[in-house]
Length: 90
Image (cartoon, rainbow, N blue to C red; front, side, top):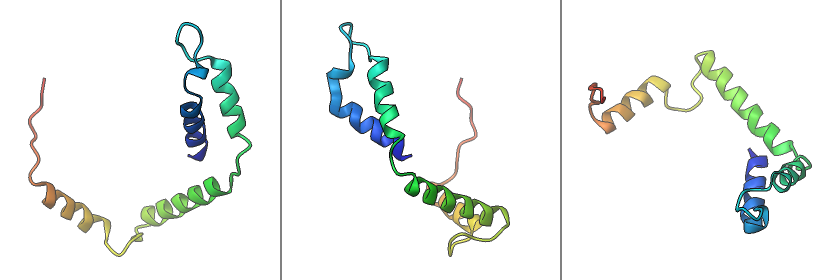
């Protein structure tokens, strides 16, 4: 989600300024970035979540969401990968 990207980008920009004298992240500094992210526009996230919801509902209803049906796409990808090994590793 956009909020995480915002916080991660700001953390990268802040660099060592986020750290205390022991080299650990200062919770107050990270919390300030998270707090700042709450002011971002939610429109893009809502559009993405709506699109995801519509696609899932089409899939759950059995309606293909793309020109390629799910079963044929799955069999095509397994053909490209080749046979899978069923041996377990301990």
